[in-house]
Length: 126
Length: 258
Image (cartoon, rainbow over all chains, first blue to last red; front, side, top):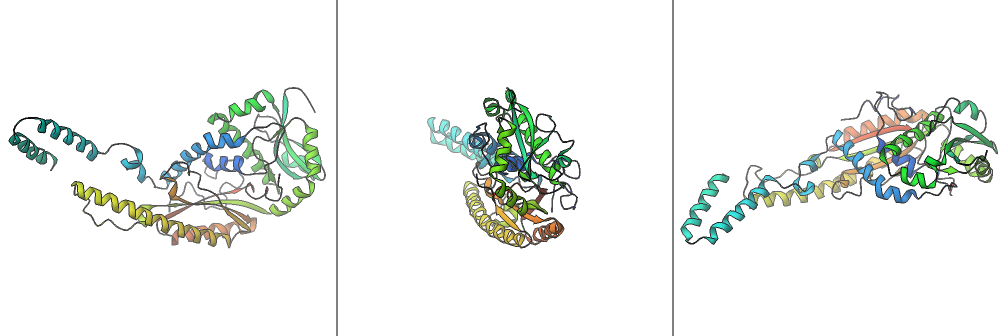
């Protein structure tokens, strides 16, 4: 079980005004989720469309806050997954390099060169 | 009080009795002293704020500024949380601003029955948040492929297996989340599942499998925490995170439809 601070202690937060018992700040995402999405929603005289702001920025900020929380509890697999982060993996880069080398080699005359070269590449890879 | 250039920021609605005592010494989003407006046996905790910073145009601009937003959200929550220590409170959504005190008093008068009902609902109760995070590595079946093999076929098979087992892991996690929510509801007066707050990023959102919030009797808070701890121990691959008690942000507004 991994928890930020001692959240299970009965005195945790306890209406502490945004501070949990260890003096650690309450997650901003948790606060925003409540003060913006929840609470008594009643029309004031000043008209501000919170929905626009929520959609454009708050949701994004909450994403970041949630991801940070997720990392705190050890769920960070996507940060290493090139398919999700968009970073090319070593394998993909290697693949591209090999393809372009093969292309170059195949453009040369003489099949023997290419075969030799491919064999050499395999040794590099292994 | 109607002065050019200032507005009235609302924090909370509370009972009129001893409202002044309950908010004494509190300071709000602009560092202003929080004061009580009393009407219909109710009181609104409000603060006078400059429209230059909290007016319509300024708010629209400032709310987009994360640092400003973070500071004001914390200040708004701090006022409500402090008031919640001494009794029931209806939190007002952040950035609810009126042009003068009379408008707020009129609101208390017009909606008195709703406000009293809302205060009854939340008296002696607090809100606890519970999030469940699923760890796909623990939920997914083991990969039969040799992880050392770097052949293209092995890589593709491994990817296919990863994707399939992640889908399966998510189904398992979703079913677990249902069970957790039901288990926690048994220790609460009411409960709600909210959308995972990270829905807008594809792929990653799946793993916050429960974003629940629960209205819990003050005397049952320890039981509720114990129930969360028990569920957490019993759920393999799922971590629970509990926050609160919060003021009843997610429940007090239900009685008062705007």
